[in-house]
Length: 162
Image 1 (cartoon, rainbow, N blue to C red):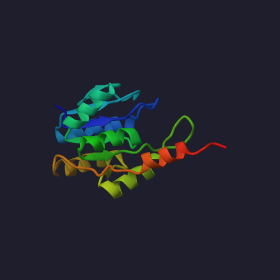
Image 2: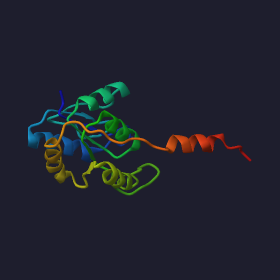
Image 3: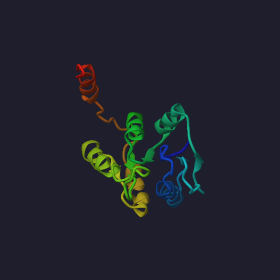
């Protein structure tokens, strides 16, 4: 069983920095790990890996993990939070363009960190220390996931169109 599970999502260019940092963290801490690497060019040396997983398998891996490291996309963060494990967000960075949605993840990561106590890793070199800290905490968390977004959307969708 993987103690650390890393996931990059489905972005067309992958996320080499996250995959490499997670792999190096597993090496440094002597942890078993698994990475969903998508289209990343970096292939883990220490961690088991697959490019893509069926949704159910990703959720199962999150639930069995002691720690999840993932980019800060809403879908993958939501799944990690529902799994109730400690999470380190590793937001994508770089010049934002239509082909490279990057800087939009940092504000979400910071807000989730402030509200739910998630950790945010800004530099790959910081990941081993953050992982070590989180692994020293309780194994399971209960994130408050209640939201009024579904009600807002339902109200908006039910309004008459001009």
